[in-house]
Length: 142
Image 1 (cartoon, rainbow, N blue to C red):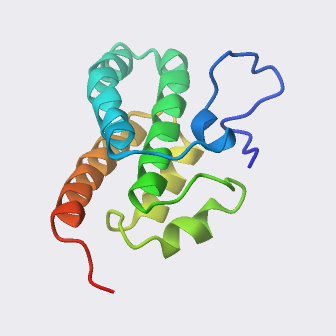
Image 2 (tube, one colour):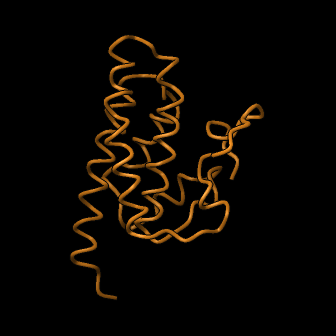
């Protein structure tokens, strides 16, 4: 699970990315919605950091919000985040996701302190929220 972008040796926070998943807690629709709401709260603050060219200050909140998106993506597919080392294969196999999710996330993973990463993350959150709303209204018949 330990991806270096999210888990560094000097990370001594009380809360950490994917905490709910690591503790084995199951997600609810309310928790999923909270991830989307959290982005809506944080996105303008992060955008402002980029507009002020405070790229290194924007890096940490971008990584935090990237972890929120990944959780939302997994939770929308009724999965827990369990392996971030090989996340590309897992994300590629998820049925509910925005178009080109793997490629877009790779770009964010590689350059979280760039404004283009913020643009992609903003679009991914927006598209994912629409997918979740449509999917929950009209679930697939198996």
